[in-house]
Length: 392
Image (tube, rainbow, N blue to C red; front, side, top):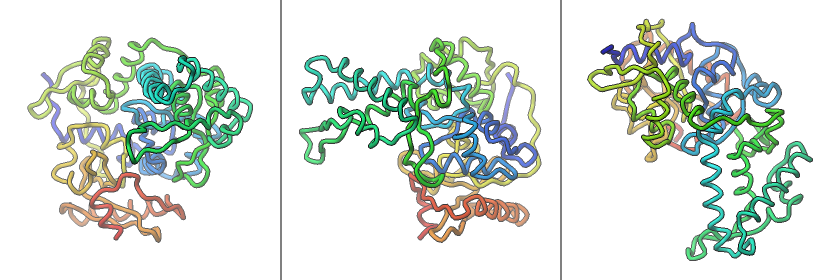
C-alpha cells in the first residue's frame, strides 16, 4: 500500500490549491476549478480566496467573471452551503445535491403553509403556482430584488408564522422561502449585490442569464461520481469520513459514488485514505510559500480531519460551530491568524515560531491583502476568538 505522509499532503495542497507562488494564476475561473468550488456563505470569502491565489488579479476581475463573462455562478449545494462554482460544474451540483435540497425545502415550507391553512387543501399546487408566477415575473424584469418581485406577485407577501406556539416567533413573508427554493431547483440565481463585493444583498436573476438553455439534467448517480472524482483530484488523498462530511451525503451514497470510480487505498500516517488510482505518483514540495486565507476558505474547509495542517491551533481559529476564521499559512500548515480592523489595517499574529525569513514573507502577504481590500471593510460572518481579539 502506498504511504503518503503529512509532508506530501501539504505539498499537494500548495500545488493543487494554487497557493505556492509558481502555481498561482490570474485566471480566477481556473482557480475556482482547482478547488472544485469556493465557499460563498460569506461573500468576501470568494474574493479573498481568489486574491490569495493570484498574482495581480483584482476584485474587478472577479466581478467580471461573475457578472459579465458569467463563468462562475452562486448556488446552494453540499450541506446546504452557498458556493461559487464554475458554470460547467452546475449540472453536477444540481443533480448530486441541489435537487435533494429543493425537495427538502418544499417539504419544510409546505408544513408551515399547511399549519397556516393556506392552499385550500392543496399546498403543493398553491406553492407551485407561486413559484411559476415568481419565475415569470423575474424573466420579465431580468433582475430584481425580493421586494420588487413581491410587488409583481402579491402572494409572495403572504405572511406565515413558522412557530405560532413559540413566543419568539412572528409572521414573515414567504418571499425568501420561494426564492431559495427556486434557487435550489436551478431556476434562478443570486446575481450582482447591491453594494461592494463584501455585500450579501443580491439581485436575483433567471438562471438563463448564465445558462441560456437552463441547467442540463444529469442522473444523480453519475453526478455524484463526478463530484467525488473532482474532490479527490483536489483534496485527495483523504479519509472516507472527510468525503462524507464535505458532501453531506449518507455513507451509502458516498460508497455508491466511489464504486463508479477507479480509486486506491493509501496509508495516511497510519490511517486509511482514498486517492484516485491514477494519482499515486509522489508530489514534490514546491518552493516556500506563505498565504493569508480568509474565513471559510475552501482549503481549510475541505477536510474534517485537520490535524495534519492545523496542529493545536483550532481553539483560536474556529468558532463553536466549526467555522474557521482568517488564517496564516506557511508551507501547507496553519501558523497564525489575521483580521481587518475598522480603519482597514490588516493585523496578524503567529501562533508558533517559524523563523525570520518566513515572517518577512508573511509580512509581504499582509501587504498584498491590504491592497486587495482597498477601501472595502468586511467582518467575517462567523467570528472566531483570535479574529475578535485582533480587532479589539
